[in-house]
Image 1 (cartoon, rainbow, N blue to C red):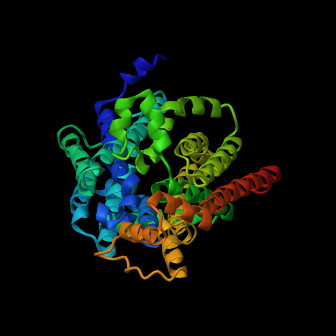
Image 2: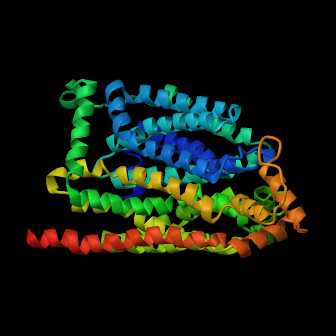
Image 3: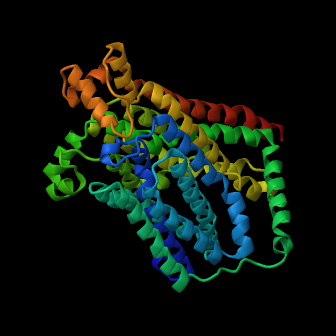
Length: 487
């Protein structure tokens, strides 16, 4: 059928839902891609000066909660209605974004991040459910293709815009996200209509009974040890994947040399290089990492058309391998151009593996429990996010943190330097340590790189992903195929 003919069959609610998805992803990734930099950034530049461990704890736990809560929030939406739930979600989003710049303590910022996570968890199941309700067998393929395109466009546009505002003040990053998410109030109030949620059955249960039913379903699915093992294996992939947001921006900011990227871009498109670049002729870390979303927009259709010719397991294991090696390589170099090349490879691995995970769950699920098993697909993302926080926190702090290495070097040389705090920032400490050693900042950074080898963390990150890939291959060969052979 002609795609244009299919597009005309979508009701207006489909388009409003997709527009809200675009703006929500814009607002979310507009701050999320920069959040690790904000938490750990030097206070004299507007950051909060938290440790890597604090950053990892906050982002790991908060993001894990975000992906675990949709089980409950989906039930809430079915109970009180999609429009009311979306109104609550946008309210939490807007208030938390506006309040974020007002607080600087770890506890207060953590609480606000949890508010954002709850808002995202309320939003997440509603739009995908609306897309499902406004499509049919004939239009679902194109419909969900449009939905995922909106996700990636929003994810790409958000950091691109907020990075511009960061040049002036970190406050504007959160205000920009608040303004974007607030626009969804207009779409919600004036245009979005309450979808038909059906009557009878579950609708006749009390909220407590419904939660007990949902909990029982999850417990039933997880009682299948083979399925539970699969979820744990895939959690390893997500642990590696989330280093894209939790660790890589900080690593590039601390160690990366992005001047070659600026210079290369300047020769091709000077105006864009000047708009993206900083005053010192570098590309901000968040825009470097955001290239992943740009690559997905450019190549997802091509990769998907190739991947559909092969079995999900083969595509998934190959994709995880490519993504794991490429992500590790991003941490192995200071050269910005090489980082972009490795991010391109990572995006191919991500595009190959991530969409196939859900498809594989559908294939291994018992015929009468497919929907139940598919409903558990969020669990490995939540588990992976939690452990990603540990890797980007405790592990990064010990293996790759520039401030930690500077403090070790200062202590080994008995330098008498003030303690980093309210009146002595991280940048002040790095400058003072470099001065004590008769170096400028760039030379001091290179000295720490050569002596302490922060790039060694690549083995941990790649190792987690490759271990998950090997475990998945063995799982398919010795667990799933063994069951099929016995059947």
